[in-house]
Image (cartoon, rainbow, N blue to C red):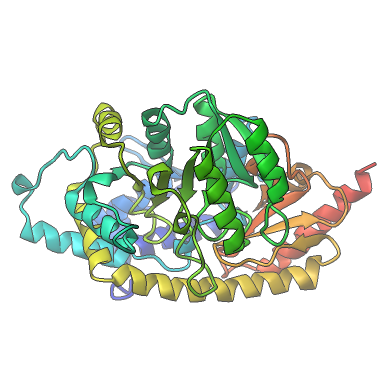
Length: 467
């Protein structure tokens, strides 16, 4: 095998080679994998490259190493139960198992990442900035990246952000946790659109915040009268809404509804947490965002880099005005140790407009794959599922035509090597048990049509057992 080093980073090609080697293995028991040096010679790459590819597989639980013996792979039976009884942990642990077809991803960067340009920029910066000249500890994030994000979110002399109002953290969970603590929102009540990202729900629950869910309708609209009644009846301290495309619903709320919601929140002094993770992945031209109508002094925007860039950029960020002292205290206490050079590389990708060009291409790919997956669902599962037409993002939301517990469907498919995300993962109150989230950023080299057929069969089988 000769790696094409011009089209991708070598470690990614080595990683794929090992995955294919593992997936094609017919071994019943444990299998020893090639050593670092053997693999490097076989694929004409460096030992450090093979070591990094093995490290990725080890992090995913696909392989394990033994001192002085090398790397090993032990096949896992699809029917073998996973140790965790928590559904969310079970879903994501199953998706990492070798040979599983994961239909539960939500990462646009799986179709096309910016990792290659990011790492190339990082190498160039390392030549320009010796490590001794780069500050090793910048508790609020690299100033160049904070400046680039502030400029990106500034729209006018009224809707503007300054670099000191931008904070970079290790991941979305940590920046949400610190934001809730800085704004003293622990123990309050939160209004959220439902279905809602499980990451958000977990952080709200961890902060002892009572979650009040308002279900999204198939057209992406909320029952505004119900929202108004909740705001009048409950002492709501914060609300969490998607920026543009609903996450994970995939629908687009009308601009007039967003404006009305923001007016009500502003009247009551309610904090608006805007989830901008998929804000750049709408299929419609220039969709309205919640922040277009929000009270900027009661607005917090959060997002992550990995949806656009890829796993090499796991960091997250938050923008908030007038809370510098409280936010700085939280970040100083957490003391993140994030690579300043990688943050500088990210900043250069933004300032050069490389991210905008990349995002435009990814949007086109997402739209194509969404159409492809929707077509498969219409062809093979039209009698089993009603699918929400996606206005953007990386996933489709579907509800069973007849009452079916999707957790049971998930268990049936798991035994066949397919992983879906049951709808109950996206509710804190047990909603959406007859729904599921499906990704179209899947491994399209696999027979996705057959997987959709098996999904339809599993739903039919479970329906026959439903009273």
